[in-house]
Figure 1 (cartoon, rainbow, N blue to C red):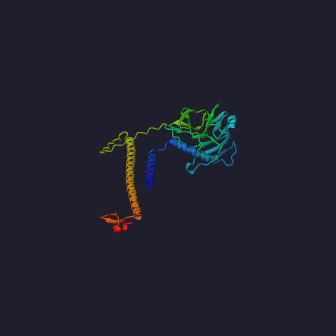
Figure 2: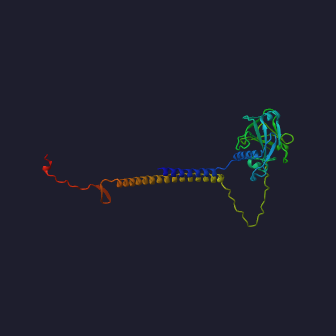
Figure 3: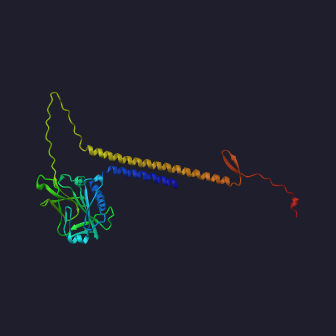
Amino acid sequence: MGLLGSLMMLLLLIYFSWLSDLNAQSIPLSSRSRAEALDTLLQDYAYRAFVRPKTGTVYDGNVPTNLTGIKIAALRLRSGSLYRKGVKYKEFEIPRGVSETPYVERLALVYQNLGNWSSTFYNLSGYSYLTPVLGLLAYDASNLKASNLPELNIRATGNPILIRFSDVSPASSREAAKCVWFDLKGVPNFSNVKSGNVCSTVQQGHFSIVTESIAPSPAPVSPVPTPGFQPPSVVPPPKGEERKGKSDSKVWIIVGSVVGGVALIGLLALLALWAQKFQKRKKMQQMERAAEVGEALHMTPIGTTKAPAATVTRTQPILESEYVP
């Protein structure tokens, strides 16, 4: 049964792998998942810029060609020095009193400028970006060849961290512009823009200046009637038709998965019966071979089978006088 067990396990693995791929295709990747994957990738590429690194020196990194337009940099610091002195890093002014949790002896600040990819990874419904999204994330710098590192939680205990945006698109009104901060969970938080296009924060994350987007109403178009022409009546699609189509698709996926599972179970049952019969037939053949090799009796065919038959030997006659002593 070892071969059968291996075959059954292989078929089950293939089925569940197909089922998981099917579910992965039916569930789209969320924008937050894409942003987290981007942070992991940019941390790896930012650390690659550390070639013979010096503490307190900014190193600009390179991104993959499929993310052209994004700028990254890395800065390694001692935790004590950052807390006592602070640092000015690109558009970020980090004051004294900034600490990290958990504590590390050295930390690296990874800078991100998402450029034209801002709305792709941080889609903010109802708002338009006036500046690119800038990111500031802290990581442990004890191993500069490490990747997929978790972010450290940095917090300003005194004055806030300032972000001075230099590339700002003009807004329709100053009151409409808002600072937005995305925390590590991707939740947006809004605040007022300070003089000089400055935003403030006490934590790390991603930052930008946005304004509420108001879609212009389309100008009405009055059709020119044509004599003798009756425009066709347009029947609007029923509400929820698109949602119904998606639900039907999911139902068919579930039904297909169930049918595939039932078919697989039936196939496994047939394989089990076949293997049982095969093992029984093999055992009978082994018993027959063993009987033929070590037989002590003469085998006589009877019908379609063979049966053992003893050889006939007559008792030799002996005179009674031979028993007399």
